[in-house]
Length: 406
Image (cartoon, rainbow, N blue to C red; front, side, top):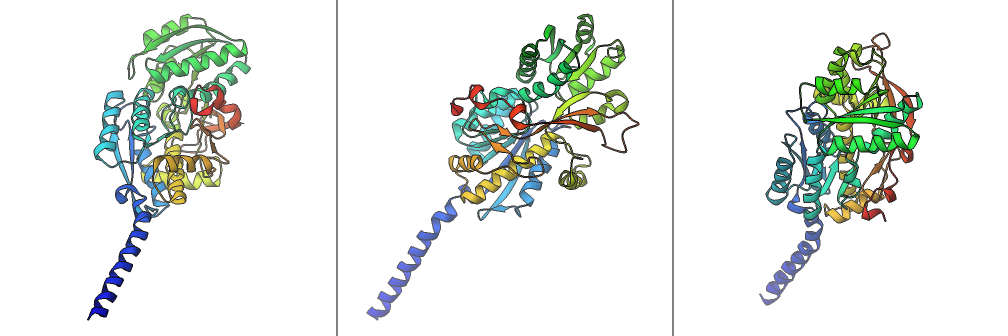
């Protein structure tokens, strides 16, 4: 009997040892769930360019891993920040403190994103930014856990601003959304225009989500500028372009520059109104077989072609999951290091890389909106004029003001 008891005890000891050896591997994923929160505008002026489409893109990335990474299920949760920084901050804090969210993704609206950046930095959570453009997010207010993925205002200025200057249009006036993103976009474009030898004749700022641009456009028209730069996005850009046409601004010889335009904006405007507009984009669905195949799957779920923000959400979430799989943990410091180590290679980015400041470097594209006669069908809207190499498209991290890059 004593021998049997010893044997049983030994077996229990061995079993316990096996459990203790196995336990750390399972415990590497917090709560045994990888939970990704897509936080964006689901009901306002940015809902079309992000919204549910970004959530669909995130789910598509998770589905490619069978909705399971490092032995843990992947869950996508969503919320509407209503383009308000306080709501964005409150939701991000709630998600992290009580919702078990490991990653916050998307967050168009730079003021909202800057608020979320502070929370995710303090709480050590990964932040995958596809929607916001403020350069401060990978500059002065960078975070070791923050990754600015799709575009930024420097890239918009380097693309569209430079292209119009090279066409001989050297005098600018800005119609700017009065919050962090618009102000940053105006500042970056102003810096680019002046560095090339151009001048700024003035600017006017409008409230986010305004419906009447008449007074702002009349000031711009009266400035005598060669270019009226729209430093806004989404529904604001669409309304401004439509009302500019009513005032005959382009017919009188001034150029209208949508400094941040999305394919959904062109779709809302129609080619008759949007034709000829120059824009900079990080993604176009009809560039190659890979982009067409992915975009076809997206359209089947969303009912429309993807914007660059939605494509960027897919790419960022996929890269994050790839890093978790390689690191076998969701520990933020470990995963952030692995994300910077791994190249970004997918339908969105070819030979992409993440710099020390969290800026994902990839090629951008200068595009021109087709005329109705040039378009061969639905969503056939862009002519890619040229590829802007990653190192030209984005700011040198050492000049960004991010302490991580020094």
